[in-house]
Amino acid sequence: MYKKLLFASLLLAIMACGNKSNQTTHQGNAGEATEETTVSVPRFDADSAYSYVAAQVAFGPRVPNTAAHRACGDYLAARLQQLGATVHNQRAQLSAYDGTLLEARNIVGSFQPENRKRVVLFAHWDSRPWADADPDAKNHRSPVPGANDGASGVGVLLEVARQVARQQPRLGIDIVLLDAEDYGPRQDYEGTHREEFWGLGSQLWSRNPHVAGYNARFGILLDMVGGAESTFYYEGYSQQYAPEVNRKVWQAAADAGYGHLFVPQQGGYVTDDHVFVNRNARIPTIDIIATDREGGFYRHWHTVKDDMDGIDRSTLQAVGQTVLEVIYREK
Image (cartoon, one colour):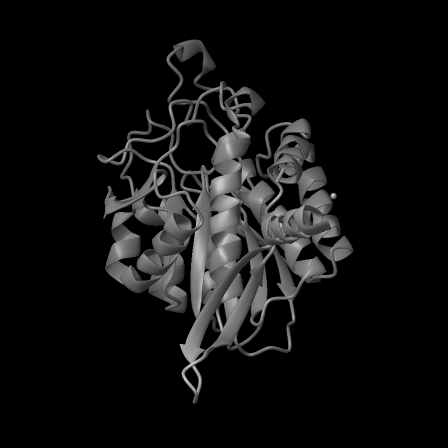
């Protein structure tokens, strides 16, 4: 890709492509340029992330209180443990908007738990019980496969975890897989619609983190990050609570060559897990979520077509590499 002098040049090029590196230099006492910092950023593997997305979808819809949900939760916890993370399972019965008690489970994988400097990464792993946005009304009570809406963010974070296990960044990393995000009211619900009907797992974690007194420098939530032709704008609540984190992440995306997907312009407001993390845990947290300028979602959102056919490796690559760039640049 990437005879004697030519071979040496090729070898250097291959080494440079293998791990992205960002180097800053300053002038020494004699005026010569000397290296100040070198940050080696692993290369995100989109094929690996794709396989993690497919593994979740293979369990079937991950709706709380179902066998598929329990089996997938066991798989996610085991995978984080295999990667060397300290795993916490935060289990609770959470009451849904209609009074249904959900057997919920937040799964946390912590790397370098002793490190007080931390970054926290979120995604929800449950899937929608009803395809209530499907163009065919016959599907409105069918569960959503949740390939993009749920599994894509988790797949990216599992690949991030795999890279972190191989090469530790300077900060501790917590990967928080949140449950019961998508059990909000159906579109035909006639009662009062409230923000707190969504993101039940994030409300639990943000009020009672996996470690008492937990804090992090900032957080990043991934949601619907695997669809083809996705674009990512500054989400409204993210810009309200954590504008500096938005700028940091979008700049990292531009530096990595993904500025055409990460558009540094204001998008719509999305009630998502990060809202409760900001309000309750007071950790400045942003949402990387695919929308158009008006806040419109992925075209198969909450439909039975949210399956593996809609997952695009290049989008997973862009988001995953951006997250790696951010966490490995932090000091």
